Length: 151
Image: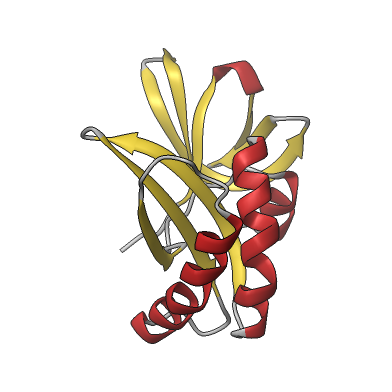
C-alpha cells in the first residue's frame, strides 16, 4: 500500500467505524485521464447506498481540510463487493476455507485462472484445494486473488 493510501486510510477509518462499517480497501488510480480516490467498505449484512452516502458526506470535508492529494480527483465510496480482491494477510486469514479465484500472469497447465478452496497463505504464496488436490501458487505468479461466488 502506498504512503498516500495509508494516510487516507488513517483519516477515513475512524469515520467508517463510527458508521458501523469496516474499511476494506483504499484505491487511488488514474482512469481515462482522471484520478479516482475510492474507498471500499464492508459491514455485517451488506453495505447499502445509504452507508456509502453517509460516509462520503462525512469524509469529504475531512479530506478537503487534510488535503492529502494536491491534484483534483473523483471521490467514491462503495461496497467491497461479493467478489472482492484479497490483498493483505488479514484478508486471506478472514476467508481461509472460502472459495477464491487466483488469476496468474502466465498460464499454468494451460490455465490463467484457478478456482478452489483457499487452504493456505504464506508470505504471498497461495494454496488452493482444487478438487482432491492442492495447488500452491508462488506470489510472483499471482496477478490477483478474489473471492469467487458460484451461481
